[in-house]
Image (cartoon, rainbow, N blue to C red; front, side, top):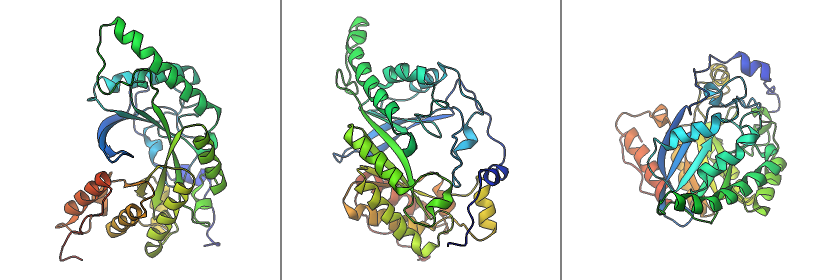
Length: 338
């Protein structure tokens, strides 16, 4: 693989199509979905997809830029987006604030909004944000402390309004801050070509920093990123998951790399990329759960793209969903296509 050239920001940007139209005062999506907890329970997680400025890192595989703005949103816009989503979501014990980039990039999430954001989500048991390992620093600690302050403010405010506590309000106990970081792959030739501007040492340092400061971590791992063949993709994804657990990560989400961002479509036409097979995703989840080192999930968004058989695709996807939630390996789906 050493003869494969790196791909520049300019090439990545040049291969893109247009962005989607977004409103900087509204999140571009919101939902609630179940997720297994460390204790073995399955609990609802609210996810708010915040609208904000595009990430400055031009990762080769990323398609999240499609729902971002070109300029920094004004102060107050992010808290309004959170209010809008929470008013429309059912109760949940945990919340993800995903912003298509890095929560602690102050050109994405205005620094002056940190306190208002923390106050709005302080009632949740876990607050999960996404961030590049290089940006894990003082901002993480400040937001962690703001969550603590926000939790303490919940009691007098609710008492003043005559509101009883429900089971999803923590009182004075602060939420657990959790930071989701993209590891992508530990493959020594592939990682540098993803244009992520990160080394494995960077990820290790970020993991150590978060662990030392009582901040949980999860990792995103790609299944079959560009420049990787099918026969090797499960082994490399498993190695990446093991590396993440070594760095203190508690939960790994394995994402089947998908086309559609422009540059990956170009690489596909050149023979340097193809999405993984559904069988590889199944094998990855089975082997990840068998590690018994932490929770391993596979991303089922747009899983239909991986279906090759009209008879078993939906059943295989449902099996993966149950394995995600139970963290148990279930019997394979029988089909004549096997």
